[in-house]
Length: 284
Length: 157
Image 1 (cartoon, chains in turn orange, red):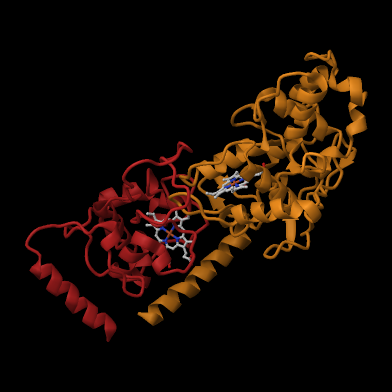
Image 2 (cartoon, protein in one colour):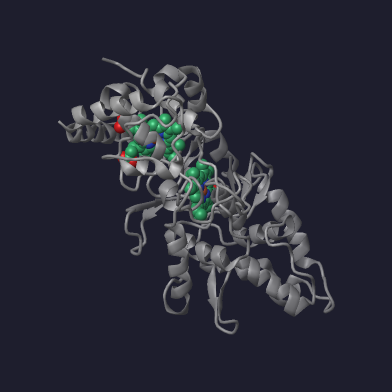
C-alpha cells in the first residue's frame, strides 16, 4: 500500500510538471498601451511573498484577442465608462454645489493616487480603499449621496483615477499602522473557505498557469482593476471579483466594502507591488 | 500483508450485510486514506459515474484530464491526468480519494466530496449566501460508488 502511494505520488509530480511546461505560466507578450505607456507585466516578487518569485499581471494569461483590446484606448471598451466618469468629475452634486473638479481641478492632479491605495488614513484611523475615499469626498466635501460600492458610477470613477496613473508601479504600504489590516488580509487569502475548501492561494498561488475547466488561472492580481469583462460587458470592481471568487468555493461571501474585503484588497494589492497600474484593463 | 488482511475483512463485512445500508459521511472509516467498504452495498453504475465526472457537483474534469472523456470540452490541469488511474490505485483507495482526498493527500486542493462538517463560512450552494439547515455532501453515497466504478474502468495495462 505504501509503495503504491509513493508510485502514484511520483506520477502526480510528473503529470504536474508536464502540465506546467505545456501551458507554462504567463505568455511572453509585452504590453504597451497607445504605443506609449510601457507596462511592467512581470516583476520580481515583493519581499513579503514567501512562495512566489515572480509576479505577473493577469493580462499575460489572457488570449491574444483579449489582450489586444487593452493595447489601444480606441479598442478598450472600458474607456467609454471612463469618459462618462470625466463628465461626472466636472458635475456639481450635493448640498455644497461642488464637483470633484472644484477641489482637485484637472484629474491629472490625482496621478499616482491609484498606485498607493488601499492606504492608511491617519485622521480616520483606518485603511481606506479608493472607493471609500471617493465616497468620503462625496459625503463630506460635496454633501452628496455615497455611490454604491460596486456600482457602475463608482467603478467608472475608479477607472478614471486609474487611467491617469497607468504605467506607474503599484506601491502600497504594508507596514506601520496598515500592518494589522494587512495581516488580516493575508490570513483571509490563505483560508480555505466554503464546501470546496479552496483559498485564494489554492487557485492563484498554487495553480496559476493551469487551466481550471475553461479558465486559464492567473495570479489574481488587482493592478488591472477596474476591469472591463467581455463576459458581462461592464466595468468590474475589485470587491465584486473577490465576491465572485469566494462564491465559487460554495462559501458565504463577505460583502463588498466590508472590513474583510478591505483587508484582503490591501493584501492582494501588495502582492502586486512593482507591477504597473493597468486599470481599466480588459479581461474575458 | 495489510492489503490481504483488509480484503478479507471487506468480504466478511459484505457477506454479513443482508441488505444495502448507507454509511453516513461522518461514519466513513479511512485506513491509510482508503475506504474498504462500499458506502451503499450497491454496485456503482459506470454510466452514471461518467456523467458525474463532467457535470454538477462532481465536475471532476474541471481539474483532471481524462482521455476517455475527450468528447467533452475543457479538461483542467489542476490535478493529475486520470488515465490509467485504476492501475495505480485499488478500488478502496479510489473510494477514499473521492470521498475525502485529504485523507490520502495532505492539504490537497481536491475537494472532499463525502464530507459534511468542518467547513469555514459554508455557503448555500453557489448563491454566496450562508448555508442553513442540514448539510448535504457534494456527492451522495451512491454517486461516490458510481464515480469509483467509472474510475475502475480507467486502465491502461
